[in-house]
Image (tube, rainbow, N blue to C red; front, side, top):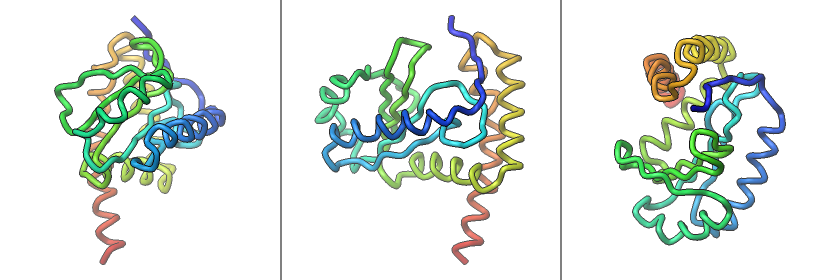
Length: 173
């Protein structure tokens, strides 16, 4: 099984995202908003070297109209029944993908939370540092269990999202 291993930030991650964004924009033909999410979107953040991409569409149920074109550029659809609000595609081999494409309804709660978390980390380097430390501890504790690695970060992510939502409400007031 692939080991959970964090790598120092690599500026080519942004370039990889931009190339993939261009390819995905051609696939979706204007029917999606494409965003770089996840730790590779945060400069200076250690991360698993997987480019996470969010595509916001008007209706995830209609993703089948784009599925063949998504698969033609190297992605594989992965069924995730636990997340009915999202459609997930992986580029690369199982547990060793290079890109993850998360398709959400644009402006839905899951879409909004992905961007809210990313943007909060970008604005708060001290929180980014805390998150990186939690990720490193999780990788040490669960080197061969990605699900446990992910779950061990969930309470911190939830607390950051609460802080981000409160900050956003203050800004809206």
